[in-house]
Image 1 (tube, rainbow, N blue to C red):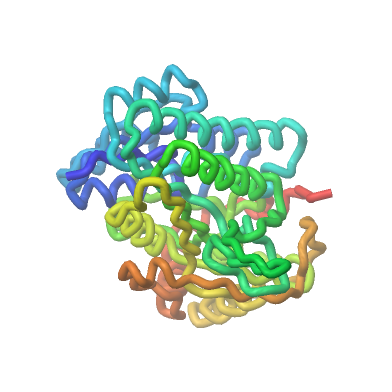
Image 2 (image 1 turned 120 degrees about the horizontal axis):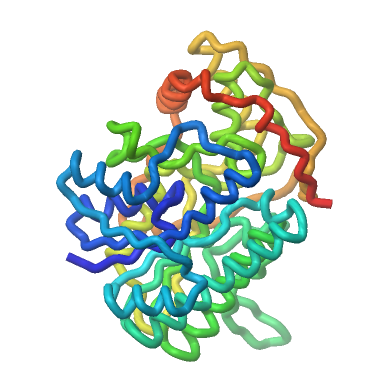
Length: 383
């Protein structure tokens, strides 16, 4: 049994990860301050499923599984709170999901931008300080994003790049060129961690994750009260989840611009598997280990076509429509990222098939009366 601290344990990924780890026999403490819930209320971006609070979900999980997730509610940007958590729980591993996760929200206005910057960097800094002071051998697993890299016109390596310049060679973090303030805070996370790995010998795994889709995991799919958040709006909904809900609602799939924007995607079940592998095989002391965490690359047009095909097989009338792109981004570009590290650890991906996509659409259909089409386009513009 390992003591694992899950920061952001109420979130789309944090809650199912907490359940999975507890089912695996670990001693799990999930911590959250309900920031995502508060922002969703303030922006009128409520998820499709009704999601009980973290304490109620933990009680329900124990009832149906016999496994326990301990819960603490508090602000990790508060040094008094996070230091008390670390001193009382003494984690052997900590998984860092505790950040404002939406690129569109970070670009809404000054208040949203400042909240994103201060929360994301403040929590990461406090985490580093708490590990150094109270649990120096603790393994930090931080959820980064493939969005840190941007869309360079060369292959994207796995975190690091070897450079030869004027006859000399060295190894550097792969150049970052984020496309939103949210993604920029993730770049800053990586830089903070790399600095303190060098200074204090921390052990860190930084997971550069692509956009996640999916409704449930093995642990959460059987009970509605255990389902993770499913946001489908323009602010918090990832493109796959948004398109699936649009298809069920009979709303045109909103492709931004030319639709050639290409990224590496993965199912929420793959996130559980990848983070689990990272926890089970910790980085060495004084190592910043970076994995590119995705399964398949798709353009936005690819996603729209796959959702449309699966929807039509279920009798849904699915239309694809190009809309003005609210983001400042390349709509056609080269994209070839490496991703071998997690496979070397034994990762077996849960690839997207028409059957799996159809099953997700069928599940969303049960909640069709809860869909609010006015949430699909909210007018958040990068400029």
